[in-house]
Amino acid sequence: MTTGYSYLKSFRFFLLPFSWIWAAVLVIRNFLYDKQIFKSSEYGLPLIVVGNLSIGGTGKSPMVEYLTELLKNSFRVAIISRGYKRKTRGYVLAGKDTSSLDIGDEPMQFYKKFPDVPVAVGEDRNIAIAQLMYDRPETQVILLDDAFQHRAVKAGMNILLTDYDNLFTKDFYLPAGDLRDLKSSYKRAHLIVITKCPSHINEDEKRKIIREIRPQPHQQLFFTALEYGNPYLLFGKTSGYPSPDGEVLLITGIANPQPLKKYLEQHFSAYQLMEFPDHHIFSIDDWLAIKKKFDSISNPEKYILTTEKDAVRLEKFSKDEAAPPVFVLPVKHRFLFNEDKLFEDKIRYYILQNISENGQKTFSKT
Picture 1: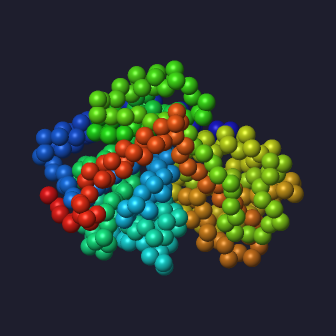
Picture 2: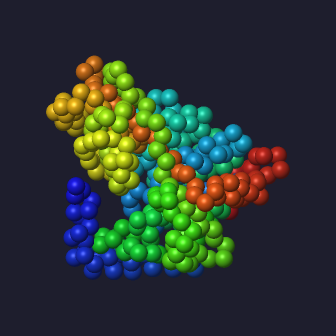
Picture 3: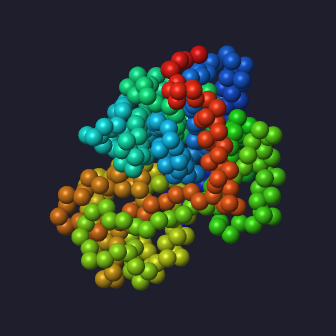
């Protein structure tokens, strides 16, 4: 099946002149930051950035969740994101009456999963950090989601993600490619994670990728595969849970649904797809089209399956008394080569090295 994404990429060759212009802009911008003509702000507490060099899905949200789960019982951790496609502007701190329209789908996903962890959004990361520290002065560690390219903030730990099937070294600049930052920017990362790897990747291929990336002496490479959990019911009436003999209607509004498609091909006898743009805000017309498509499936064992990110934008239709069963498929990173403990120890060591003796950093901007 040809997706809109692959169709677009096949014609992007003609956009190469614009890519060279974009690359020139990036060179100038990074030069100004490197020479400290543009200033970067540092803060008196550990900041951990999760980001990438490209547009599209490299697994940033599952990595933020992985880190939150790792740290939340030992440190007072908070999350800051931009809040893409929200209907608000400026700084917003999630609360009990917050919706995905207020803060965006991914931050809402974080807030629903970790209700005791402060989740804030803001286009200007400096303003967001300052306001969050005012609202939650007890915060010890801040996770900055999708902020690798935001050099106005200098983080102490940069985690760079790159997709196994689309390594940044083999990509090109927007709009002909997917890169939104210079390839050389990878040198600012402390940890580099190759995401969405096949679970059977071997040591020879690992070494080949390491040679391709050419990590700096201060950098460590890790490899992860996506691991899908058991689907859980979001809303709707059903007498059972998705079985391999059933037919799935997959609803996605994510940048790269290819790994999810592969999973369905391996675990279900049949599936159909309704693909929407990344961060798509579902309308009532979309919902009616989804229901119509679901009703057209002849298999009596049929289910709607969606991602956790899409679920926060579909949940508003839960009051529909005629709603079909909608299941959510959770996903997380699984570290390969038994290197999960090494990764986690590096994160903890960085935090412990940068936190005050009494476990509380005063907020200071330098």
